[in-house]
Amino acid sequence: MPIFHPDLAARPVPRYTSYPTAAQFHEGVGPADQARALAAIAPDDPVALYLHIPFCRQICWYCGCNTGVAASDRLRRYEKALLAEIATVASLCAGRVTAINFGGGSPNALAAPVLARIIAGLRQHFAVADDCEIAMELDPRAIRPGDAQALAAAGVSRISLGVQTFAPHVQKLINRIQPFEMIADAVAQFRAAGISAINFDLMYGLPGQSVIDLTETIDQAIALQPSRVAVFGYAHMPAAIPRQRMIADLDLPGAAARFAMSAAANRLFRQAGYAVIGFDHFALPEDSMAVAAATGSLIRNFQGYATGQGIGAGTALIGLGATAISQFPQLIVQNDKHLAGWEGRVNAGQMAGCRGVGVSADDRARAAVIERLLCDGAADVPAALAPALASLAPHAARGLVHLHGHHIALTADGWPYARLIASAFDAHLKAPQRHSSAV
Ligand code: SF4
Image 1 (cartoon, protein in one colour):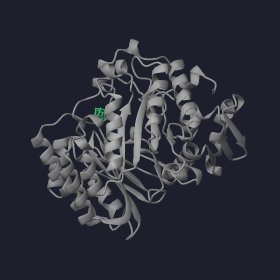
Image 2: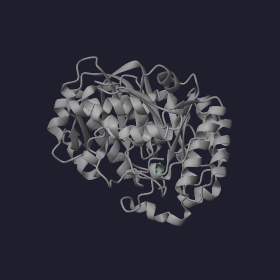
Image 3: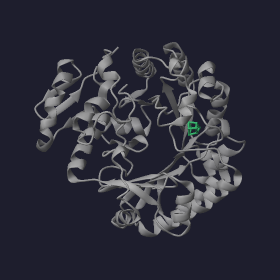
Image 4: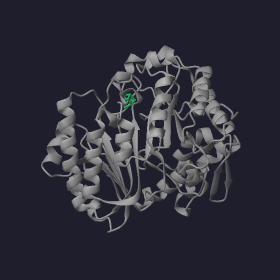
């Protein structure tokens, strides 16, 4: 087991799903910048689409997403506005879509026929590649009879089930009751419908959760053989996320227990034959993410780890829907977070971006080092960023990182601290910040 360093594990650092991170977003970026970035995409350049559905059937107390429970009228208006935004954005973008991801919220807060109409709208307005993967996050509690067949018929080829934990007492404390049988049944339904790529999201650091609870959850998850598993650490920030005030501080495991949980996940999935992907993902060896990790084409974007299906450096991830974030080589831009504001803009045929950050050449060089460190565990540091290497000496002394000239490599003991080590190349990071702890 890697060594627990309390002073490092508790330090708040970004998840680096982008660099610069969302903490640097400002309102000087807007729709004109977004339109220019879209128009700069060359014909046939690969692009990925992310569609944000900010609704859920029920709210989990730990959730940091921009989501809420909505009535059917609100859902109908969202579909109409999303189709309008798809038409407007596609009219400016000549790229070829190689990956589509639906997230949220819970995309299946919308009925399967609505999701099928949205996918049809994407195919109508964008040039969608024949082999484009369409992935969708699903709330298992909201899966309806016939959803698996309907989504498979619409072209969905990968689903991601929010499992989080199988421990009943933990489910109660997070307001998310979903028995093991419900998940097993969902897996069987989607496999029977022909969708064999099935991801699970699990969490550690939840209220009332012990290492044994997590171990049992992982054993149950492995029994269902998901293609990929993400094991995220719960980030408790009740001052910024009011619904997290439903979780009592006293119920939360301490830093040492969190570290032990993260290490247990790593050990159990490895023992079960899963490839370890970065610092919080696991995949069966034949899954495209394991292949990407083995071939150096794993990337990070706003969805976390992703395969390099056209989303790599120099290409674009286009976000659609309220709150969605788009990443271009020179710009990161976020759509209006407020439903009414986003809806008004897209129904009027306008871009909905209203905050973001420009990405300079220096940012891109730093982003590349951070991304390679978090994806490959090693990076070559360009001469211009060499001064940052000096700050890694204390980590090298603890055996967390090897330094060879301008080449850095995480050790097995260093992986749990990967985000903290990568933060040495973050020129924007100022303490204290609203980020999750390093482990
Ligand atoms: S279902 Fe997912 S998105 Fe919705 S509240 Fe729970 S964790 Fe958040």
